[in-house]
Length: 242
Image (tube, rainbow, N blue to C red; front, side):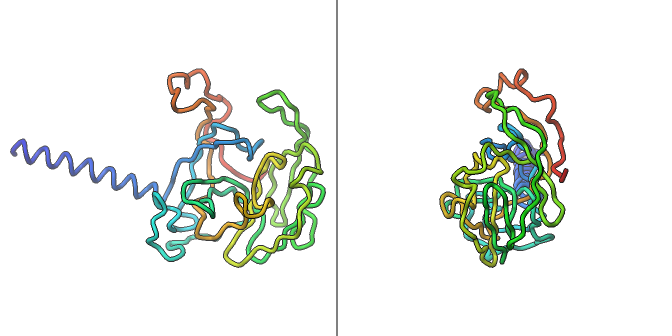
């Protein structure tokens, strides 16, 4: 075997490895890091997640740089369920991803009054569940919220008369979803109208958050600091209802 042929086979092996990795990232799983505190206390800044993309199928939003190649979604296995934590592409640009909790399904009427969610006129159950100490030392009220389908999770609320704690009634259009962050007074989400999110089209969904792999708030630009900044309590935590 000539050196030229051996070198060609080596390059082909590398190319195949890259293509397989891209295929897995596009269709199966994609890593995602939490950039802000809008999903506290369930997700912390620096959490690294596995997001399952195969759950909802593939759309343009699933692909790098969101090229205009597909019409809608293909290879869908499941429809999004109320209460799932989902990563999605901004409805307004292709460069920004968000992670929020799915509250409103197509056709739902959603309103927030004094911090309480109402879905189609029915009050969502919320009960006190102690407190949460934030990284800056502030102590926030913690609640357990339970959606009509039985999905329960923690939410944080400082006060019940924040600007987004009282909204108009939002009618979710067909083919769209209504999302909220779990850190209610520190999340810009569908409650704020079209800026920055509004209703999220079905084709903008990227995938469902499945597991926190590890957590490190230190930037990847300072990777040499990572051994000292890992959160030892946040390894391989499955995302599930309480």
